Amino acid sequence: MSAPLTHSDDETPRSPLLNLLIVVTLVTVVVALWYLADYYLRGSTEDVTWYPPSTPCDLQQGPCEANLGLSAWLELEVGGDLQPLEPFPIEVRVDGVEVESVRVEFVGRNMNMGINRFSLAPADRGHFIGNGQIGVCSESLMPWRAQVIITTPDGRKGSWFDFDIRRRT
Image 1 (cartoon, rainbow, N blue to C red):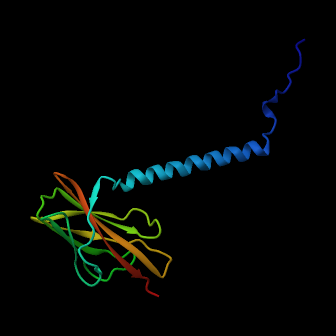
Image 2: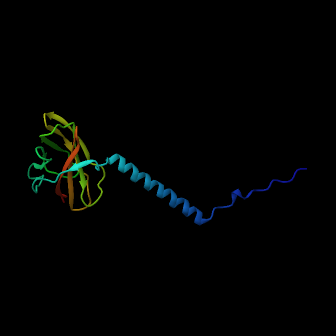
Image 3: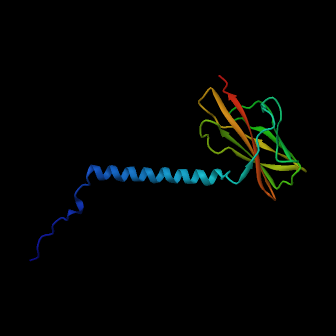
């Protein structure tokens, strides 16, 4: 006769503290992966040489300009009434520098609003066009920043233009 089979200690329940530590570890890993993915999908702007806008400007009133060094400049113009989730045309004109590509990013100035990046297509020498869209926000007045980034043979240059969107009620 053989000895009866006994249950091993593997079936004892885990301690509640161990379960809590497992959940906290998993949440930490998920948050870290989200930040990592957000960083790589958003694209780093650390290698951009930033130039301030030439004068204060309201994109909803007309085009805005910025000097990009000694003899180069860019102009950003958006068309239509800027409202969340409504597509609108974007135009960028660049002069005084050879441009390989242009993109415009709409960034929430006081809160992360996700990725709102739009690559523009060349329309003519120094003229780029495309469509953009701004994300929805629960705030009645949302401050935004349009970042224009141009890629040149000498590196990336950019400028920004701040504006506010008042949500329709």
